[in-house]
Length: 498
Ligand code: ZN
Image 1 (tube, protein in one colour):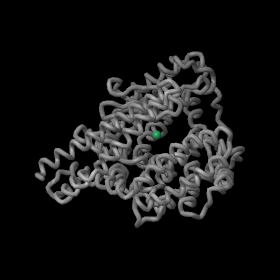
Image 2: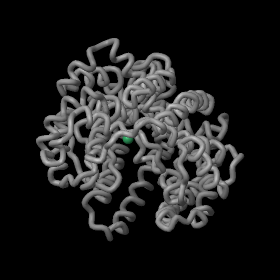
Image 3: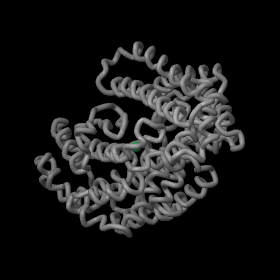
Image 4: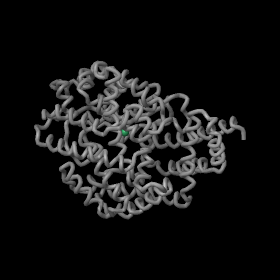
């Protein structure tokens, strides 16, 4: 084989994989936005075939031979091609190591688990979910060995979501959070609480939709390349850097919910839209890791979106969209209301400060489950104990406790920590950004172009060309969890007058 021919095959292979992903994504997007509710069956047939075909493509012996050839000629490859080869080789090896029958069994198990979890959550019945969860834990331990047998099982799983992050890294991170934030949250609990009742007046959905359009304008999301849809659990989906979709969910009595989901998903979209053209249709085209992706969404949502400067800039316009609801409210009251801290039961509804404790609890439980020091049957008890210890709240039932998230039912152990890491990366990015550019002057005028430009230059453009840790280093320097706890401590002490 000639190198030139191999490179053409590499390009074609990745375009085929892109096509399968596109088809799967389009079906998924349709299913959770506009598809009629009783139409899952036919889509399931199509998705099953697509998943099988894309697995065949990556595990084919020709694919292995092509990648081996390219690896032998690695010195002659350009940077993107070398990295593409490495990444595909990693997926190829991983896939061929998992025995086909186990892979099928696991796919069927997660499919079943999702259904069982839904019912268990609805009825707040952990016992119903327990046997399935036990099998999922068992599978995850086994798969961890296929991913990387040199690592401890939970480290191997963590590595799948945030390459380079392991228990040592996360233990140090969460120790800092536990030491600095648990006492701060307790102190805030004793301080005078902020009134946010005006956020829960009646906000018609039609007006909220127009407000979302305005927010997308402020975020400079080009509507020719990014649309907004409606769904139950908001998410962002990218086809390529010219076609990204965000979604939100409107609640008539809670204006901030949709507002911040638009800004959060908008942050994910900015990342995908900012990736370089020459990486498109390759395996390097998407955001590099869960943690780095969340660092972008949370940067826009919390660091910018919940800043006094940003609220000051958009509040007059907000009053125009909601004249009756906000005529007696000031920008400062709005700023304080959207930053109200209140320990609660549900992770997805948590405020900026208590959020990472929800993640820490899940991390501690997963670590023990996969490590073997905690049995599945004891999860509810440990969950409830940790919620009391860190957040001071009593968990009334498993629906609002250990059954609230879908992640484990999908076999995703090791996913949660990236949410908290993302927030922490963001705080450190701010520190570096402030040294490079005037962040708050333009933001206070509603102009996010300097902020977006900095993030694009340091992070977005590279897609997955670098390792997650290199991207973080490029934007933050050496990762220091204290930058995050200092950012939160300063902000919330000022808000609560402590
Ligand atoms: Zn997100």
